[in-house]
Length: 41
Image 1: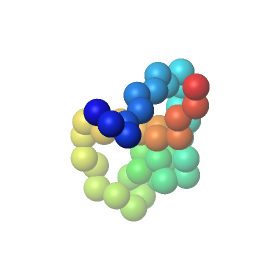
Image 2 (image 1 turned 180 degrees about the horizontal axis):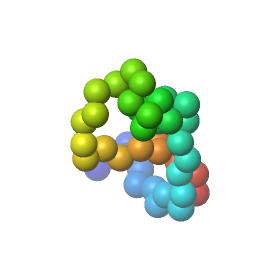
Image 3 (image 1 turned 135 degrees about the horizontal axis):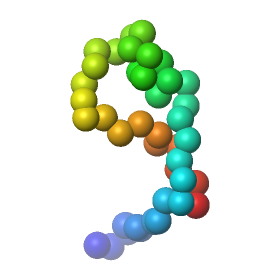
């Protein structure tokens, strides 16, 4: 589609919010869940 770009993600990392979610300190457990939105590549 116009104005859209597809990228191939080589790797991603976790941020502090991802770690907090993983530890279930502030968020309810909603699974399945894909963490790691900090993409590089």
